[in-house]
Structures are given as C-alpha cells and as structure tokens.
Image 1: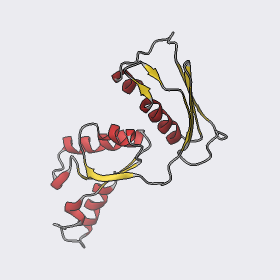
Image 2 (image 1 turned 90 degrees about the horizontal axis):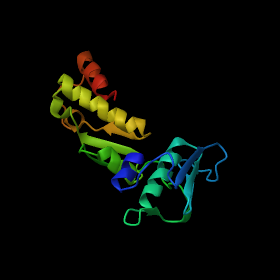
Image 3 (image 1 turned 60 degrees about the horizontal axis):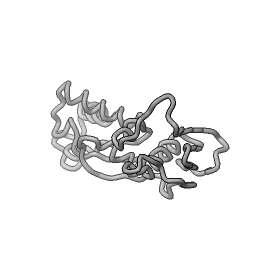
Length: 173
C-alpha cells in the first residue's frame, strides 16, 4: 500500500496529518466474504473488514480514490464486496502481473506461460516459478499454472509411474 501511494506522490512520516486505520474484526459492517467498509475524511481513513482479502480490497479502493494531483483522498463512505467468489484471468506472466491482479480486485489467475514453459526445468526457472507463486500467495490470491504443453498436447506417455510423479511435481505449486 505504502509503495503504491508513494508512486502517486504521497509521503509517509510519523507525524503525517492523514491517518489510515485498518481494522480486521469478526463483526465488521460488511458481513460478506472479501467485503469491507471504507470511510474517508479530510483527516484520515478507516477500513473495516472481516477477512484479510476485505482489508486488501479496502486498501485498493483507498488507492483508487486518492487524487495524486491534489495530494488528497476523496471523502467517501463505501461498503463493497465481490459478487463472484472467483475473479481473474487466463493469461501469461509479465512484470507486475500480481500488482495488476490486485488493482483490479481479482483473486484467481491462471498463467499458461511461466518460467517453466516448454519443460525447461532449470534450477533458476523453478526458483522463479516458486517466487511468483509466493508473491500471489502472500497477497491471498490463487495462482494456477495451466501447463498446456502437458495437458493439451501430452508429449509424455500417460501411464508410466514416472510420468505421474513428474506431473505431480509440476502441478504442486
């Protein structure tokens, strides 16, 4: 949150005149999964949610209603929640795709092309794959790897035990 707001030109100091309060509690005003309540005034903002995803979406909305030109946040009272449990896209990895996913309040992503595409299982590519999975997981997002080279046009025989073990290790992320 702070990193994104800094990109918009907002400063963070101990004596900042604008305070952001985040409260996660079981009796928050919005009872729906991933829902949140956001109240902003000229002096600060308060986000209340029942779960971590609600907190995240509240922070995203706060970023979205910030006015970088005025270095201010619009005054608002918002109660919001998603209508669909799974929101996302089918695509390929690119730089900042996790940030894109969060800023559009998506929680499920399927990447068809990723560091291990076409079976190039080098230690570096496995590390990149796992790092990307952690980046999404740390944000509470679900990341699937749709390995179409394994599932749509199998290049390995389906029955041998070693193939099953190989597929299990690939899809475990």
